[in-house]
Amino acid sequence: MTEVTSGSAGFTPGEHMTVRQLLKFKCRDEKIPVLTCYDFSTARILDRCGVPILLVGDSLGNVILGYESTIPVTMEEMIHHAKAVVRAKTKSLVVVDMPFLSFQISPEKSVEAAGRIIKETGADAVKLEGAGDRLESVRRIVSAGIPVMGHIGLTPQSILQLGSYRVQGRSKGSRQRLLQEAALLEEAGCFGLVLEAVPSDLAKEITESLKIFTIGIGAGPHCDGQVLVLHDMLGLYEEFKPRFVRRFGSVARVMEEAVESYMQAVRDGDFPSRDESYTEE
Ligand code: KIV
Image (cartoon, rainbow, N blue to C red; front, side, top):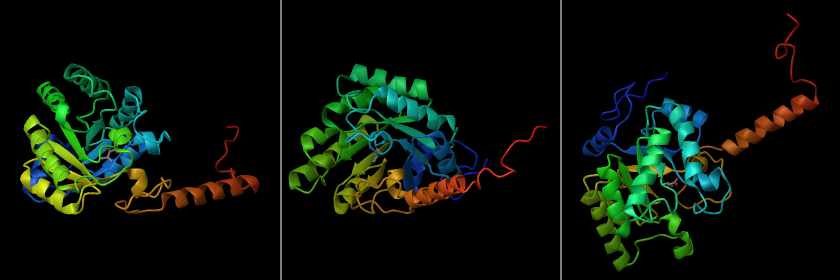
């Protein structure tokens, strides 16, 4: 198997990434690239590339299952995809999103849900959205021995309340609230924090105020790492492109070309060739 590229702080080639190793990235001022991942074959590729964290995000509801939001995503769907990623036996740390309503009801139910994800998938950590009344759930899950990543700013599971996916933390009050939430999530035991759709200067202030690392998405360049939805950055999901997405590839075009070539070859009788067919012996 291809080794993870050297030069990453604390990530010894051939070793599985751990939460403790990840914390060293921030001390060494080394940025953390994170990508979402939802299946076995892709996990193999991202692992070969040495991506330190694979996030089985509930964005799979949008880009894999075609839901309009992440609200309908079920625990069974998250577990199904997380198992496929973990089966690739990646060296990357695998973090799994807790789906809507799996951690909002009570701290007890949150521990049960996080425990189910970890036990059934073999993933390394869970991520959950929000702070406030979620803090007790974070504390309880961490105290059960499960690493937790927080997620504040734009929290897509709150879309019904928010009304639209818009930048958070622009007013003085909301800025103060996010600074406080970040501090409280660190205190509650999160090992890292996703900051989604917040102004760059606020993300910078939060990042500098924390010992744990921040991973930005639409949060500017000052976070300790960045995350993008894989299908967005590959140019595979083309329904919608937020401002913060950079397309690093045009995979939809590559797929179209391959599919068209295949159809042409079938129509022309050029596929399968003799070499691609079995003989009697
Ligand atoms: O679900 C997801 O993919 C996420 C990232 C965009 C942070 O939460």
